[in-house]
Length: 524
Ligand code: TNX
Image 1 (tube, helix red, strand yellow):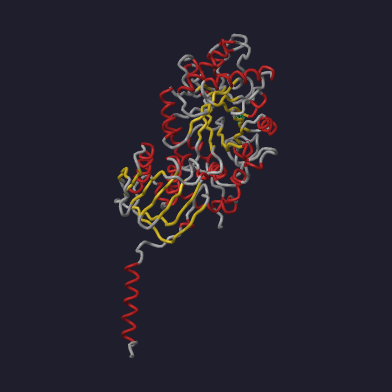
Image 2 (cartoon, rainbow, N blue to C red):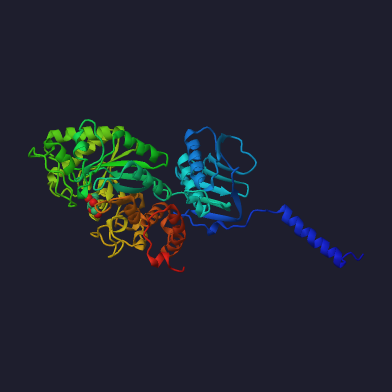
């Protein structure tokens, strides 16, 4: 039989072409490995196709968890401005056939902990699975970064919203990944703080430490000591009008942060850094005389009178009121740079403050100097400058938070021509901020001693959000990756390429980031 005439072969060829294109996928081919995810996940596997998010996509939440439903709405709100889609959020135990984003709690291995997640993108659906709603929230931040960059726009964009298919498994290496904002030297209002919280959440940070009091201002309402804010909150560095949060406003910040799985840790700095309180209540001073308010930028000249019982009554009231409005586990009591407090006064003071914090059901954090006191094993030492203090803390079986000034201080200048910032700990270029490993930083301090890392922004020279953004970005993105991604998966040469690509998103978000040519104009 001679079947293979040219015309027969041609028909066969056409049929095969048509059949394969009909039965095969119509979704554009995409590679999930091309996407930049910061911080870098544990593993990414690509499957070469795409999912299209459109106006009919639905968000399905498994079960009746209120927290999860809230997170579903958070996702819908995140997607809305740029796409114009008003995605329906429903809670269900039965998934539809296709075109949905599914959020579900289901048990993943112990290494995933509270914050880990599994994100799977198929042609017909997307799912995020985690041990807890917190993990789902972190997974949503990843989903956000693999959507087209225009998702960050605040106005509606005309485009198709394709996501590359594949699977991402992810969990953090440290449980504490923080930022600190000094609202005492220059005050930042509730709106600014919320905006900052939103920025931190995008990089999976989970703590915002608020430095609420210092020589230049007292920023949190304490109802039993009203003059703290009335007088002590009335100015700031340079003599501006300062400001403070009422307890209601503070609670609003806490709630906003909670919805983003960020814990607020409030700091009342003492016994030094207390001029604003000393100026508000004469009885806190050893000589019984209130000093003037202070609007300069010197440190280390003030101290509570550690011998007076009234000091402890004051501290007791402040800690009690603060504990009542703070759902988080920790209260930060400062303890740094008490240059005019004798060590023999400092130690019993910190010991008593520690008892007060514990009696109010909280754990205490203090700057590394507190390691001189009789700290309990559940007290946390925040390293900033003295290696030996951090080591002393670990000898006393405390855990440490790492905020090395020469790597994580966001108020340090990038280089000699940076206009804002200070330089006492040296210049910190983007590379230097990224290129270090927490567990190799301090001799004798290993991963098991380290709770995590935190990036403080002291605001002696920072007066508004534009300035804040310039000092914070992009360094904090590197810090977020140090806290999340294991050291063995991190590499500067790889990171700088990803950061450059990611900067398109910072532009669309309108963040005023520092963009040195060596990274942002380089051809990699
Ligand atoms: C040191 S770090 C301080 C702050 C300053 C900062 C400026 C620390 C615990 N104390 O009071 O604002 O340097 O970089």
